[in-house]
Image (tube, rainbow, N blue to C red):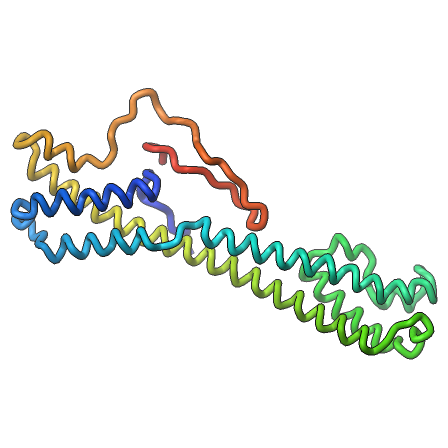
Length: 244
């Protein structure tokens, strides 16, 4: 599937304001636009589309949800690793690091495991602890400990699912916002073309009301508000006027 990209280079906030002003300008020139089959209903529909885009949450809104989900997942991950060691270290003390029974737990390098690897390992730890419970009672292991550990593993899985869902929502909403912005801009471009057609060599002031991008002498300015979202590992910055 091809990636959906923005067809306009102005910041979303500028597009919102330009569209809002354009509605007022078109209303002023409604008699002239009627000659091009753009009536009051079309202008109202354009205004509604602009309002819809204004009310659509920005990308940072959903990226923040991803960051929150990452923080929640990381917090329980650390707890899960600690609780894993509390169980497996009992086997380590009883049989030694090179023993086959300790190896059954599969916890070597646990702190460097990916989240999916850690989840699979915790399932193995719970199963192995059940199998060796009668032998590890002497080290203080109980069935309640194993049951609590299994619940913690399930909670970790829930956090992983929540993170995956937050990422999916963020990506979906980002695409939806781009599509909506592109749709709004397509009408902006259409109506501005008509507006310039109406007023070209007739009224320079009104003609200028339909110019979308002003020429920028001196080239592009440096990006501003550069930032990094740690949870989602995304860099972002404000769009630079006239940049593509």
